Length: 264
Length: 264
DNA sequence: CATATTCAATTGTCAGACAAACAGTCAATA
DNA sequence: TATTGACTGTTTGTCTGACAATTGAATATG
Image (spheres, rainbow over the protein chains, first blue to last red):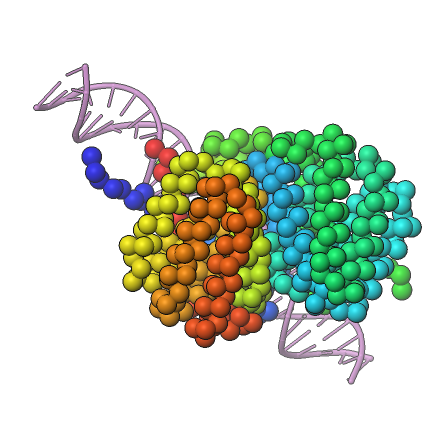
């Protein structure tokens, strides 16, 4: 039989409410920073009851298009990178993405970030990098701190690159790699020196506006990272879901999620 | 004053419902493919009324952790790449990401995809690529078709790379670049020949397991793309939101969104 | 003018109701 | 026997109406 059948999709009312509000926001009719209409107003607009409006608003809320300001009214806002990361993380975890997958992409994006940052980094940003490195020297003996600082180092460089698409794409990778290697942390001590050296070299290359040098050292650093993980017993071909313990993940998601800034 | 104050966050009941259900899914307690408990059951479990449960479920729904199966029951599922793309797109549009931003990242990820695909591509996938190219030759005169086929070509290569993190990261970039250059489409005709040649070369390099060749030609192709856009009058430093017309975007989002597969 | 009080508006949650869609069973029919 | 059609209980989508807790603004007070 040659009958082509499209699955029948019946949209519910609350989905329609969501779609219309979303469209209005993307179109700029509901301006960022302003409150959406009250539920009562929306009832009048859409001619559905408050329960329906509220369910539609929940969809908006979860897509990050509205957030809670100081009061209870919901404020139209651009979804932040954290929101995007959340989705990536859920998707990656449940779709059996491997450490290898993450690492391969991260390696490339880090290189790009270095290359771009050379041209765009500002003096304050350079100072932040320097400060990160000296902090790391101070806490050589504390693996937990080291890992956190390492993550921050990479985020700083990505930010310095001044490319928001890069930020959106790289952030979740950094978070997941960090979370996935958490259990390996204590065994990474031995490689702290190498890490510090690499960071130092990357920093110098960037501040000297030497893209090639920066990329070379960053790549070495990433390769070291992989080697370190494997030596510590991590299986790079295993889905991250298998060794990211759920608590760590939940903490990361929560940390991304909040705290809602109170904009006083 | 040295008082550090964390903003106070009061979670509503429906958010608590969402968080618990999300945790259960990520932890694997609610298995993918199975229906979530009925609303009545959840009422008993959480001791809140159905309205509250339903609002919590809407959050789940929008995060892609449940989808509608054939019936009305909601089925636990891994958020697909499309879901992740949606978020990226909303975020990028509202955060004033520029064409330049997108292109820089895309260029890098395409190169990576080529390199990986050389080692991993299967025979059927090679055939799909070949078919894509011959279709393009057939429709040389129809810019709309050309652009669609170009987009597909890149998606095929990404898929062939067999790296799900790469798919998750690149898909939204491809969609947005496509949407942003839609208005320029008719003026790209002149470059169709160059595009075809590049695709051909990339295809040959990949099927000959020649990563360097593939990357070189893909990069040329991406550079051509940028040159073409600029010659056609696109401003690469302008936020995409300014020239992605909303209808195109809405169509892309919807196209990603549905149709819900009916899994018969 | 600054501060305290009041008050109406708004949201979060509850309680209960009903029609439509659905899954399953079983009898009637060809 | 295989298909169709009718019946039944379940589940969801939406409505109705209500109320307490917050909140923002207006008001009164010093």
